[in-house]
Length: 472
Image (cartoon, rainbow, N blue to C red; front, top):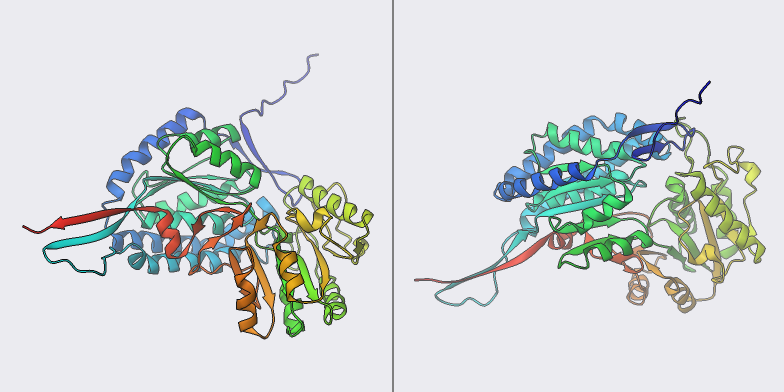
């Protein structure tokens, strides 16, 4: 009797749910003939879309938002199954951050895209600068905040007169479906927004294609280099948001209770899988012991478990391999002298060989340890004692990344002054792990280049065209 034929999965995209290891989504990748058709349609659609009045584009975006909000509960459920965030938290991605960013971009667009008139008036001449759309924008989005990271580029790009081709992570492919569904419900013209499921090789080809005028990528440093290289033979730009190893500094005069509450959340929300999550904390020696005691106590109140349970507030990591990476970081740090303050048995759901990982707090750490230098992207944080501001600044800057820094103090002037010396894209005072749509989301060093959101985000999605008109 012959053996049953094995299923050919070479061209299949599979989303394995971290909830239970089941295949949640399975479908074929788009082939290059389909990509070619999408790009041809996009180039044609952009010629008409750029002529649509801004007020009409704004209407489309608000209708799109209305549809997405109406589906928030459904979106939340499928998002939990795709990437493991607790069901008590996933609908909020649409209802809060997503909604805020769409509305802000719509409101900001007239000012961000308005003609710029030189201050020096010259008789007989009309002179101004107009913001022109770039053309076809490719958005390559990640799984960890799949709606927020994608919308940061998609809505401003469309408002600016660009068209968008979205390639979402294989871990969260239904996000692309939801965007397409929402724009169709809003009546967006055909070809203005399209999405693709692509292999890594075809994603690189997409970035290299001459019909792509801008690439917005959020993800790892390794892939960021690939994207940068892919566009290097053409005079186009890639916006790269590549993660971080974000620090917090708790000064001697900090509100201890507030700092503990917010930094525990900043470290462990989304199982620590946040590019701007808190991964290392420096505490003034006078507050250190009490801070650590309270931080550990609050961490132990978390409930790790099945994210479909509404009582769970800490779900699995996205994949077992990623959880194993964090486990290895912790084990290495302990071997080098660090002390782990959370007994993993306190979280029974935490098991090796699964993506379920207990939150961990490490002390006696230093910068010779990978857990203090390499991005963890998981539920672990190292806490170090410092003597003064100078030592804290030196340690915070000792990193290959520079996305955000969080300072905790009652002295706002001191925090602002410290911020001037910090190598980072954003300086927070008495808050962390938050994105303000009125400010550019940007970074330095290996965090990448470019910016999204705010007026500056619109500037990156357009080019200036000068008009120098002599009146007859």
